[in-house]
Length: 514
Image 1: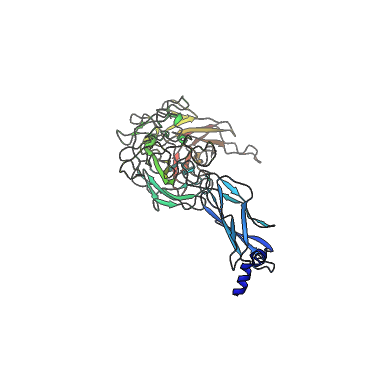
Image 2 (image 1 turned 60 degrees about the horizontal axis):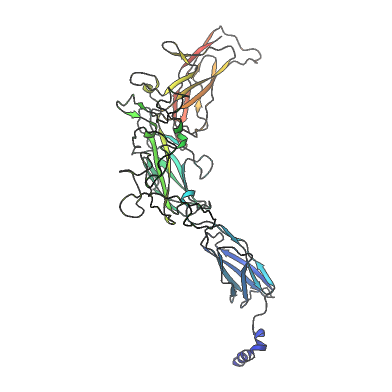
């Protein structure tokens, strides 16, 4: 053995090639780990050399190279020798830039070449611009759009335990969902359970259950909507109310002033049940926030995947629950002390690649009107129900609509809850029907789930002579005129999750069929 080794070393010029492993018969790609690497992660590619007997071949030097150069992608090592036993050699690829990258690695031994699959690097830190938080699933998992739940009865008493599912979605700046991110939640009123934290699933969704309970939402004074809210070192720039509340259509009395030009003044009314209490829509607007770790958003103007000094960014304040909707933290509002200095801090004026990012969601707790809320009286100068068609006439006012035989028409009225909010409507069947006397039937026109919540809802239903003009034999002809009346029960669903049904009756409409 010593002689053989000596000969091999001594005659290096002539015998060295013979002492090396012969060329493999084939090369093959083995695997990649991880299969879906994120930006900044290392992924390992393994290749195997196979000899002429079909067995793994050790001691073969393999050269690795990228099929086409890709900026920010590194390959290391560029050469490796196959292992004893499995004939495998590996290389590692890392994408250091912040942009989505794709690279193809080839393994070569002289004229033997094998190409690995395309390695795509996508995904980085959670990004504040891609962080969403909404309640209610209306278009599959991860969607949102339930803006109101029924939380009060007609006496303003809390109905505890009304539930809605809320979903936070965490993604990186490229829009890729991030799995395993821990998300925390805080709320102004009610509770988020079963705990205040959740972990995102494989597509980046973290789901929690929100339900009504004490504490109640903060009672706030009426405000004025503006399209240009404060956005400075301590203000977030959020609108006073979410646009799905139609604040751009606000006026002091939206029922009496229906179709008038808006004044942007938040609606308000004295409560006929609670003396001295002024109601307005945002009294029951609940703010809640979702929080996770990530990066502040920025505009990547040169598309290099990193934030350069001159590129604009979104500076975040420390997370807080904006109970009074003024866009900044106030005493007694809950907040997260991100830097641990014992106080709430606004924007720090610099880009933070690692910080607490947060997003706000708001929903309305609604009730339904008491009899004292419906008609104008000295204690109720701003009622929340108003008949439109047929319009009331006479003294006392009556809603009269006379019909011809086999006729039909559409009746309509305005309806709000005691705070000048539309009543929660969370089921596809919600609407007004039935509730008639005489030979007429009532079918809903305003029907289904609500997607926005203005200060009141225009409720409509059709009234039709129930007799069929094409009937054979003909429908019997009653002595005319025939009296009829309608007070349609309008059923409205308080929540999409085990929700209760609220029944509010339309104003009485009466008349005759000639």
